[in-house]
Image: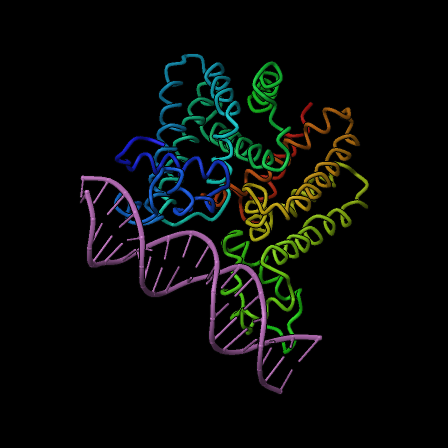
Length: 187
Length: 187
DNA sequence: ACCTGAACACCGTTCAAGT
DNA sequence: ACCTGAACACCGTTCAAGT
């Protein structure tokens, strides 16, 4: 929907939206092309093939939904407050959540795997240090981080079938986040 | 791999295996047909279309991985022991886990949605009553059941990227299950 | 009743040709 | 440099024909 010369970013953004709407299978060049006002042939000027587009989309997701968020939260001094803010961001964006569910829970194109591994590790490491700052020993902190991440991914998976498991932003979501915090930081 | 006349069940089982190996996208009639020693044309004698095959596969999954397991556990009188056995069964089958991840975490064919809804409700209801028997009030029991189910689905989602998050059957898995039980039944 | 093989539609990919 | 449109391969689907 941009002006004349399309950029690779335009295609990658459209691909990410398609993933949110219908999963990886919805990334079809033929259906993306008309949305961008181009022919499907023109796609191959920007990317070598569909897998390269998926890679670009997933890189975009890594930058916006992992690196940007961690950068934003790194300065929060209090670890509990950091976790609270993380949960707030994580659970208050249903569209982002659908992308999480689509990317983490299915056999994914082999060329996407390195990015997924990196994102998983980065997120778990970030939460592990936060739990350590809260006073838990290394191994316990890491196992709590994995549990937290599994809960996060699982909630979004379930919300595909039953959206009500994640409350809408507002006091209900705050309550939900506090309950999670209590569960996960209990010694 | 059966003898002469193929049955709809043969196709449904092959489809379920394909889901475990490569997700819903791997259910391709053209690749299933040779495995069953048939032409892809013959598929359409047994099923109306690919969606009907997916439905049958998912019904099979409902029977074996929800109803059969609940039937087996309903007789366990002690609720904590029931939960322990449920977790043991749930986490000790990686192939079944890959199916869980594939079916719960992505936008699924609309015709599969009713089965998924039914399975989700059935499982959450079963765990809700078990938590109630453990002494938690209705609302608390249900929220614990949802949390438990999210954890379960999330662990299998993560295991797609990092299989080590779920230990192999044995003492390590027992420890893992005990930790989960402790976390989820803490008041 | 159950299956085959040819035909066609759909979408990924290529490429010669346009501006 | 960026795009189009025709061509072809792949897989879902149909169907006439076989046993």
